[in-house]
Amino acid sequence: MSTQTIARRQVWNKGRLVGQKAPLRLNEIYAIRVRLQIADRSRDLALFNLAIDSKLRACDLLGLRVRDISHGAQILHRAMVMQRKTQTPVQFEITEQTRLALARWITEKSLDPCDFLFPSRNAGSTHLTTRQYSRIVHHWVRQIGLDDSRYGTHSLRRTKVALIYRRTRNLRAIQLLLGHSKIESTVRYLGVELDDALELAEQTEV
Image (tube, rainbow, N blue to C red; front, side, top):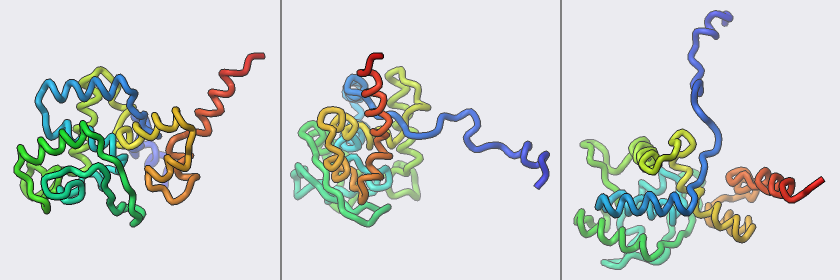
């Protein structure tokens, strides 16, 4: 291949920030949640809250059906799903505010147990696509004044576990919550080795 051909070819990540997406901070979570509540965006509020609680990958979150998180008219306190990527089960909690948001959304949309929890509005799509979800997430973070190039769907997956890790330093707990088969995957996902190293460096005066 000639040098000229290589030069003409567009680099896929030119002008983009790549790498791990930042988790949301507590004040940012509250800011997004309050905006969705004020705007009366019941679907988005349910989606946002469940994304934070479940810590699921986008494909698993969007593939949830009503029956996966409910029993009859009751929203479960805990749910379990099979991860598409690893084909292993992972369990997650559903907090009270998320249960309330989900119950309102399901009632408002008249969803049946077999229905997808977040159906698509587009003809031909059964549920929200990962691309649609990504656009929604970018809109959320822009609305509170953040640089959306630093955030993505994985930001929501990382948010709660990042907070838990800062408080407990319990990698094994994070591994279970994320459904990782290897602790090394959890270390890489959180970037904790670098964070801990920098924290030690900041505490060391010479």
